Length: 361
Ligand code: G6P
Image (cartoon, rainbow, N blue to C red; front, side, top):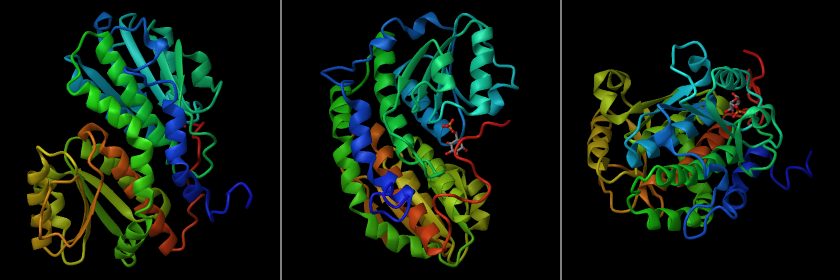
């Protein structure tokens, strides 16, 4: 096992550090001047009445990201639903449905059952899986793979970020197939190619996140806030923290703070805030300042050009297309969860009550 960990103490740390490589592998051959995805050549979203993204856990967060891009780029409803909800909800599914399933293992019971239901009802199905020949991959009409390699730690890291890059490329391709104009597409594709380097740079900030993680030493709760795409990243950041450190963590839309959660903020409460989306960042900053006024200790992850002198702990991601900013931010949040769990002496790779792949309902 020590050999498999390649010099790291835990699989999670090893897998976090593999991200630049596996992201490059996942994108290999997929980006020329435009996106190369021959699997999607026949798919034009204008042919469908309903488009769904269906997944569980971390893969559900990746699906939320794709939904956001879809909404930005296309004038078409794309609905993202957790598989366990989709199965029992009355979502219209028929021959004019495209259902996209995202799953690291390709074996999650709810995701598989949702896929089977969609197949029965005549939908077109597309699977994104990390495991070659998984049940999901075998059953779906079209399959695309992330190339994260085996992920051993229960908390998903490299599988998630490879899903994000594959989905980013896929949404560009689907938008273009549907005749949509993707704003700044050249910059987006250029920056997508740069992601492995950006991730590398974030991993070099490990010691900063290790220091920030000490803030949670005596805390039982943490509050994550963000707006728009930052909300997807804070959902994943809060999930990672809960999974491995057992700190109760919740993610809120920053604008929703004053509708309830702010009542819980007092002296010493830890707030992790993201502000990478320029148009809404000033609003988030003012929400952060409201928490500081109530005694919160804030960690801000921000994009260049976003400022507040009231926040003591700030860390900046590199300049990158805003729709890709969630990837470097996620790396920092993974490190934050990892060091919080280490600090608390938790079993990082095998947290209690959790399984790598949930094959029961
Ligand atoms: C479990 C794992 C999570 C994972 C989820 C979905 O809960 O602990 O890390 O995100 O299942 O798994 P899948 O293999 O479908 O992506």
